[in-house]
Image 1 (cartoon, one colour):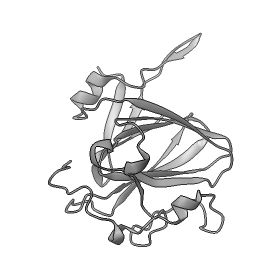
Image 2 (cartoon, one colour; image 1 turned 135 degrees about the horizontal axis):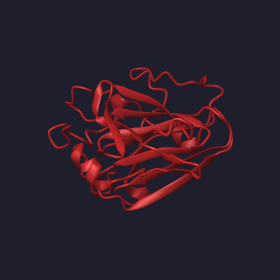
Image 3 (cartoon, rainbow, N blue to C red; image 1 turned 120 degrees about the vertical axis):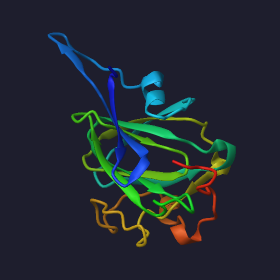
Length: 194
């Protein structure tokens, strides 16, 4: 029996919602938050090479939507250590049945949920509480030359963000990202299937 409950995200089967089981006793709990064999049984064959820890001071902080291309393209496994966030993955694989659709999942320390975002998806999140900490593993090293973004507020995607545009806290570069229609075909679905 696996220590991870893994399910496809509604409408985007390549994105996975992962809930590690907690084994509790009087001392507290132990939880296997990552198991290569369990992920492989679910059809996820990845090797993580870097782990990032992010703190967002204010609720309403939006990070994303980000992705890397070429040899530096990244799959991600995202979890929340403190606070809560709405985690979003957008399918940017032209020709995919899910192209332009998104999946949104609340991650928190309490619900112990993780989100697996494969290559070919833009990723971002909005904090729902102050002092939210996020930990995520990636399959390629950060490469500024391969870094790209997608407009977080693209009306054709219409992510139901929990913050109004004028109140969102974003980096200047994330306010300038192009819309989906303006992105080159970085991830053709034939090369990046589910």
